[in-house]
Length: 227
Figure (cartoon, rainbow, N blue to C red):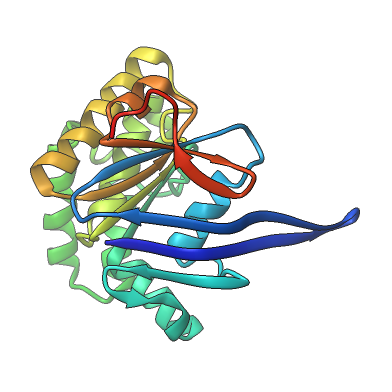
């Protein structure tokens, strides 16, 4: 489902060029849940941005769901990203002026699906996430865990093949974070959803099929990791 070969990515800084990914290789099978761990600043988020078609690598290739991302135009990347990839971040990024239901509906409305179809899909997902009773509440009225569940529902409303999660429980207390981890694992198992998650949380990493560590711009199996 995800193949990255020889990926190189860096950034220009006031101090000069900083190479973040250096010939990185990654393979994630369909239906697999893989965690990526590593110190701050080693390129974990950069990896997600490249895999998620938010950024292009300087060298190497990235294929997701059978599509070579390098072959897509900017508009093609945006369309692919919207249809095939769901994103969950440490901070939920819900739109504060809209209700939970409206936030989840938004990706479908942007894709020009009917309001009735978008509402039905959003309500079903909010129910699956356990926050149906909060559908008409705005984000400020929700707890941190509820906000993240709404964010997960929004990420899944277009039924993507891949879910990318960047420190999804990093802003939650341990108990709430554990519930979110359980939810992600259930989605992985019951839906066959391919999940690539960046995390500092050892409990979330341990719940994954494999744990990879990024160091010096490359990936390798984390010591003691599953798989």
